[in-house]
Length: 134
Image (cartoon, rainbow, N blue to C red; front, top):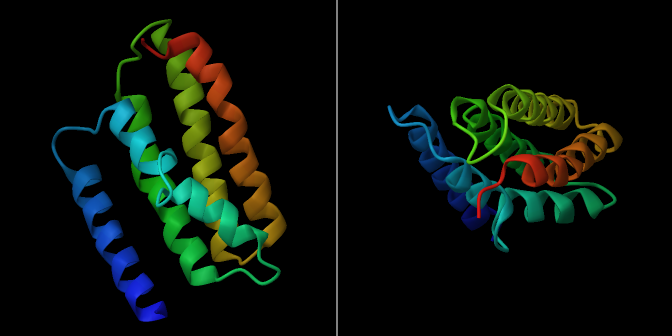
């Protein structure tokens, strides 16, 4: 079972890397959809993994890397509405939080990983209120 999860995770990372490396930056909707929506999204998986007394750090590290890879593309997009400079500030903050999450995961620090994930989650409302389209 762990091998199957590992293979699925590796395939997901390769897909994310291909998307992130493509000439066309993924849209905000694509990035958020891949990271936040559905039972298999990295956000939900990370929440579950970090609830464990002893998280599976390889899985946490793999999932946190998804946030860094895709989060890097957020600021390259135009916001559907609102001030571009304000959007870039929020998008860059999201990316910095993603890097903090990745660094905490690499250090196998559960508290810092959870804190960074909480910051990512808390950033949704401010950005959606100011910049999300219909």
